[in-house]
Length: 291
Length: 291
Ligand SMILES: [Fe+2]
Ligand SMILES: [Fe+2]
Ligand SMILES: [Fe+2]
Ligand SMILES: [Fe+2]
Image (tube, rainbow over all chains, first blue to last red; front, side, top):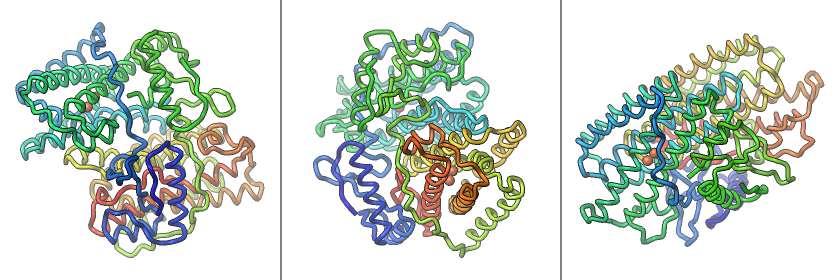
């Protein structure tokens, strides 16, 4: 199996081809992880993993994301953009989110690391639900999606990476794990029902949730600056995912995560606006790779 | 808004950045599609679409997929690989698929174009269900996925592209549309239940479904060669998605689609094998971008 240095997407394409060719002929996989059984079956099915190398020559250590999915966050995004609720549905979405904030503030108080970790488990649900429903609709109606399936699934993926990052900073306790299971069960189904009844409402609500997320990450930054939360080194996964310099800190991580949330805000308010104008999402090209 | 020629991923990254910068400063989007309302709101939220250009200078006309998601199918893949069912669960999966084939053959007979179109609406379900369930599990358990969420979602996406392609060749009739709605409703829930009860069984079943898909695309090719089905020019979407030469025909399209199915077969039998060996998917890196 060849080894490949970090480079453009084309290099990886080459590597994948090479890799496929290797495994067509000889049944040995050198993946440096997993166990002997899996190596054997991966090799039989020709799906052994590619050995990737970072720019500095060290091995790429993540299997949940690959070098070509990493990016530099656009931290210049306007954090204060806000959709002023005018219609009844908008106001309902706005007040739903505001009323959810009160118990959240009460529960977490100033433990922003813990708060971030817990809320990201919820934040990754709407994108997956929306993407899944649009995918099924596209199949049922023999219709193109305009890229919205991918855009929403990318949002879900991005939120999951937020969780994978904050997990490294705050470890969940047993009762927090139990809480997540319950909240996910309720929220997944509630959001799916909401999306089926009114995607306009569902996307607006997510837009407002993201506005709150921006606010709470700004508070997180303030606590870091005051010294109330220790500005620990950035987790390795965050450095690789957001292409951060090696000496980055938690403060840098929170800053790029906040920029991501601002991008999600834009995408979801935009989606709601499309519905508001009486159109379907597929009529307006989706912002794929918007971060 | 700038215009970008087809190139490596880096060029697109540049373009995206440039695009984002443009829209931070001036509120005008030139997307060449959509309507005036959407242009206004897209510009407000800074999510206006990028104008992409193909290598030959013509405009990229698809919003449901982007140039960097296209690929050349590896048609050298072994089409005859088969997992011999040994365990009870394997046999159950095998006979479930075999018994589903009988009514399918009866219904479609030799109308392979129609058959392909209808079956792809079903084929795109398992990847989405599996990806969605693994995503939720990853969130609930604060665990990495090993890339399996993405691998399964990629499969769903790829199957949806098969549908978008065959839609251009065979138009669904009203009763076929009605059938798809019913079948999707049943299959989505049945597969989800199956996956929750036994991912080992679910992936094995998909592995066998893909083996049948390879068989039926081989029959499709035979009918094309015999002249029983007209070898029409390849749809434009297929030429762009699989990077086919401009003069490609339906025969070329069926050949690359069949190669895709062989890749799905490998991924799903591999996933089932991992479970068979008592491991979890996340323990073995997923074959991302395997096609
Ligand atoms: Fe987030
Ligand atoms: Fe978010
Ligand atoms: Fe397919
Ligand atoms: Fe398939």
